Image (cartoon, rainbow, N blue to C red; front, top):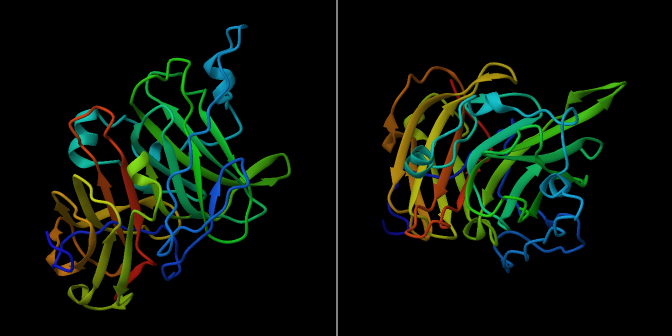
Amino acid sequence: MSPRSPLPIAIAITLVMAPLARAEPPLILAQSSIGGRFGNGGRPPPPPPRQPPPDSPSGCGFLCILGVVVAGAVVADALTGDRWASRDELDRDGPRFPTRMAPGQFQVQGYAAPGWPVVLDFDAPTEADTALEVILEGFDPRASIHYPLEPAAGRRVVVVALPQGGGFDRILRARFTLVSTFRSGGGRTAAPLSVYGIGAGPRAVGSMTIAIEALQPLDTARPDAVSFVLDAMHPFDRSVTEILRLPRGAEGDLALVRDARAFPLTLGPHDGRWASMRAVGSETPGLYILQARAWLVGARNDERDWTGAFGPGPIRLR
């Protein structure tokens, strides 16, 4: 497909309830002082993977690297389904994004490889405890790769590196769960969490790999009037754009109403319209989000990078 061509696909969605213009949030390398900008100017290369310490002679190994999380974090398995997505499903349909919303939680099922960078574009309150938990297939779900994310004001982009060793020596399926909570007395309560994008693998990190721009109008009685621009800063083998109806309130099922695929997704901006996407569900008055995902299905086994983003605010259909 050529740039600026009519395209029934996008890569973007925002689980946030207020419009937000495309911004350039600061780039933060987890547990370091490296800084920079993610956005239109000077897109930096992905930071070098943070190497974990070698296995200790005591045999603690991988659990020492990962840290055991039993009660500290809520693993929101139900947000992408209790069942693991198969490799065939991930290759055909891409990373599995949430099918449910829950306060303070966001989850993706996708591929993970030793040393891969993982990028998060999100916003959470500075007083909240926010962390990324990664559970790998075949490992005890009570032991997760745990990344506490330092508090910062406003939207930011954080890059972390997956470890290597302790049995994590090949590409695996994984659940990536972002959780944000307030400490409340002796327990925890959900904190507001806005996710604008997420990705894993060298192709998905190093610039804002996909973004949805010019999404308008955000309040309309005619869904066929809604248009957007999908900007891809890297090409991908496959991509899908989806429109989902939000549940009433902050929790419940997301309902898919439109989708469109591109094979492949080419570099550059592409125009898209609600009306050009395939109808798969009923469109009733309410709030909708635009979501896009892109992924690699390369010839080499390690070419399984994936990324996704969300549109700048919900669309109110009257």
